Length: 75
Image (cartoon, helix red, strand yellow):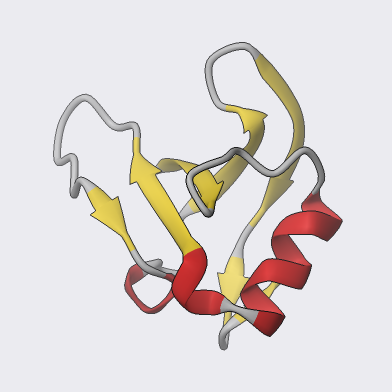
């Protein structure tokens, strides 16, 4: 499933920015599940599954980078 990332309510511009936020302040990071079917709403870092794909900076308009979270780290 595709997820949209938010750090303190803003979309991170780069994968490096998301990685830094997850590493230093994971409680400020939220993910919006964009699936039409089976939407899980807003998720925390702990709720993201390794099979979820984070798309950024904007899941609908600008898919410049992709990421996953495995073992609490952005890969």
